[in-house]
Length: 301
Picture 1: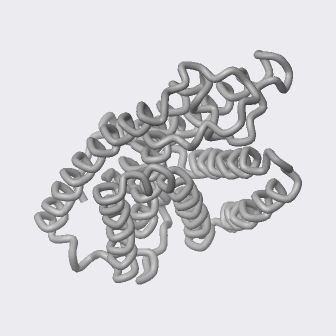
Picture 2: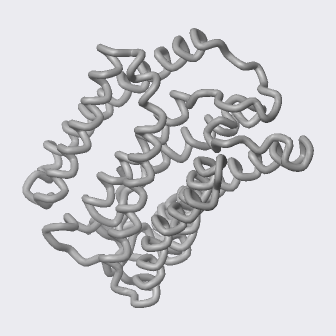
């Protein structure tokens, strides 16, 4: 373990804490922007049937910025284990896809702002996703080089490798559809990415519930994991024509609650200091000294 002076340790801890807090605040930013559009325009006058369709209102800059920033943060953030890190990378990439490829405008319950034409949306998403795929390909190559150079191949669990391969194949499949069938990609990318994103986040919550050694946090994470599909089902049944709006709302809110709880649990640490290791989890983060002298991970990725 490399010895670091206390100032550098504090800088690393504060960087991780800032990254965690930023993710929660970005979700709050999106919620506030949508709330302003719904209520300050006139109570209920801009209550659209889809959360994502606020892309076509003054919320658009916040919608794109918040989702893109959260996605990038999730990719940069190093999870407690290899498997969690794969899920975070997968979900983060999909969050950017959701931001770059909008859903259809849908209903006309409120005035749409600078409504782009179908051709405009098609051209913009083609440009944005093309650039994203190029950067993603470069990132994969860099990651592979670092992986081999550091000699980590024997330290990564089989399940983590399988998860990485499955994620890579899923993303490669999406890229293939993008390159060969743009119309199909344009219509399916947003809902497919959004559903897959929420599945990835749900699995991250389950993984934290299963691996945490703290009875209090383990119970909390299991309760939240159970609440996510239940609340989504209730939103679907009770939401009427706005069911998509409320399903998206409760799932985004659940993600923010989970991330806020995890931020509190790991305050002062880079990652969970007592994280267990196993074939289904992958290796824990390599550690440095935490605030109380216990081991806590340092590297990101």
